[in-house]
Image (cartoon, rainbow, N blue to C red; front, side, top):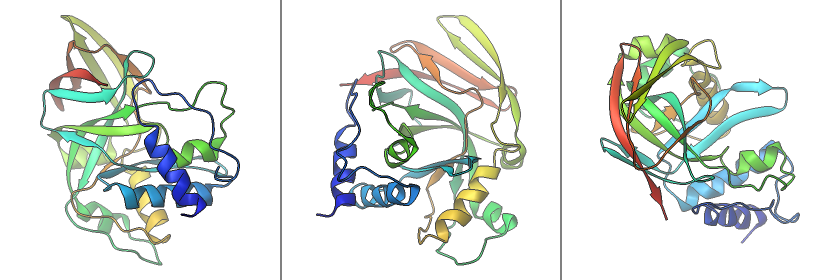
Length: 250
């Protein structure tokens, strides 16, 4: 077993309820983005990839990309590990591929990528911070650990053309009959932008994308802390809404 394989195995084993860890031992700890992506690649050999998270690169030397290994859809109950006693989620758009996108040495055009997208949906990224606050983690540590992702929930379908260009949306959340409204703003100019970057960045690195994979592209309101066992209705303006209850995995 090489260092990347051992790092992948250890990081996957950390996906437990209320788990907080130190950084990996120095001999297997990633020092660069390339090493972190190599660890992600070994994770993908151990678990089927159900989707991806991405964002336009937020700063020089930083990239936001990670495989997603758990996907939940068409269920009234969303199961996830608690993080500091709550369900931590990010409201996003999920684009589901209807066609595969193969490894390619040159860029796909945006129209080719859009054509490969079958549907767009309301989505929740399921968040879990697995490093302890005092772990001294650096960017490569977070990248190797899939950028705090523990899964994704796919909600109702929304108009694909609207979703592609979506940059702002009113987010409404109702729990116990008490509504809250948030002015949602995507971190990129359009919800599609990170997806286009992701496809071209990763296919040039030898990673292909399969039909059925879902790609989430950034939160409209950062991380939201939700209570468990409370019926929760979430809506995006006039686009769509759904009701779920968060259940803690043990």
